[in-house]
Image (cartoon, rainbow, N blue to C red; front, side):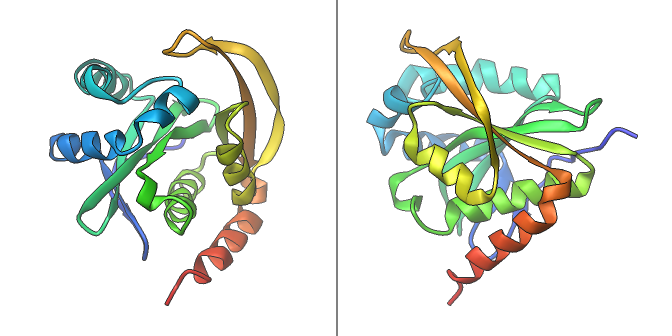
Length: 198
């Protein structure tokens, strides 16, 4: 039976992931504008200015309609500090990708990323998915290191697989976690997050 993946809020001691809604539009716009240089340096798309508007009015609704994406606002208390998503949800083959992750500068370097990824990974594997993958710009050393710290396995680089919004040819580093690895990955993530607890 193909796994189901309900689009619902996910929460732990550090973050809440809320299904992206109109209430998040302007807070997310502000969070994305907090680090304007990062979009050109590290992302396949931009979420600044008119690019944000296009994402919100065209791309996001199309993704939702396809059923292959689930967008989440990343919340610390009542503040939106970024977004993340399930991408390329392939129920027939029980695989999906986690990506389109952005955090405002104040949310980086602490428990936000590992706790958000812990929620998403738990949701995916508990729903019956067998493979979760991460696609990272080959030049993005910070994100590549963060994915490895989650416990993902590096699979290789897909060369020149896309042209990003600036016109640059991007090569993509591919990482994955499979269901048989999840118990060990989960335990390590839980131990890592425990270190952040008061």
